[in-house]
Image 1 (cartoon, helix red, strand yellow):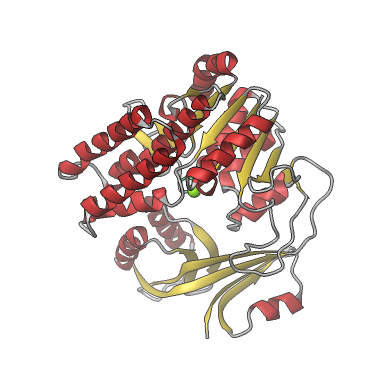
Image 2: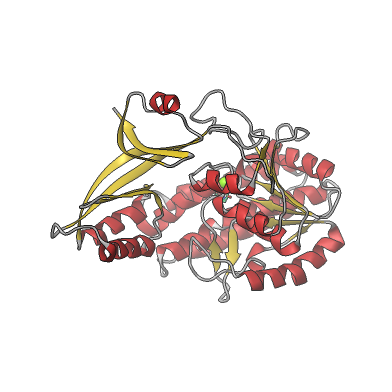
Length: 420
Ligand code: ASP
Ligand code: MG
């Protein structure tokens, strides 16, 4: 048995869903769990909806209607008679309305998860119904009843033992009957029946977890790129596909921000030695990249470029040194606001951290830090990580940029830069 994962771009419109059906028809001849993300930019729109609802930023009604029209527009093309599926879609939107009509009563993160998770619910309902209608019999399953987490909203910590039991006792028996189970990536459920999400782009992680719990033979992530590339084609020309990677290399690449696979994906697969294939849904017959245990280490130079970063420089107000007690106060605040450091550097009187800029996390973090520390910051900076670097590459990539801080180890060079 195997696990397939289709991300938002692979189900971005009706034609894309048809393409998914043709891939499933050709490549899912053995029992296959299919994990699907929200369609196209739905998750971003749902985030905007939550902000409109919770922070009164923007129009709830406009975003709501846009989301509804988008999904109904797709079913209209896909189904000869969309009455049944539209009924199911309408029900999800009715559920959403019930929430939106009341004033927020939980935390932002709690509301976020209840609403944003619905993108995956909508996508899987549509794809599952379309496959069934086209002779690919499958069972739709609700991941919230399978992947169990604690109640860390927006970053649910998975209860491995409980989720494994649910996969074995609920999911696998269904898979035996129908050969194909369609379920949601990215979302889980708590013991109190609330929905959680596993972090943005978390569907890959769901696919890895399901493979781990069911002892799958492989995971295939179907993407709009030919495989794992040595740089993001959004920022670099002449990218190269990497044919084979070890789990170790893949963990490093994703840790530094290579967005092709979610960083949490690799570890569960490595633990059970399950190979991960990254293949193109545009040219499904091509080989793509395989990530598995191997003696070979890659020495292709790879570039990982992160934009929209902020560089914080934190200094004790009393001119004391940055020492262990300060560091522990700083880190506990980072953890309180769920802010992850992408790069850190310590000097005698200042501690620098480069992190993703998420206004709703960073602004309260800065406020809190300022009670004890002086905080300086640079917004709109970029973080460049080069693996297997050489000096020529470094100077080329930092041309016309100001380097704010940099760090190098034997294999990896990192620099925080801003435009000149
Ligand atoms: N739909 C979610 C997101 O866009 C999860 C995923 O795509 O993996 O973050
Ligand atoms: Mg996505």
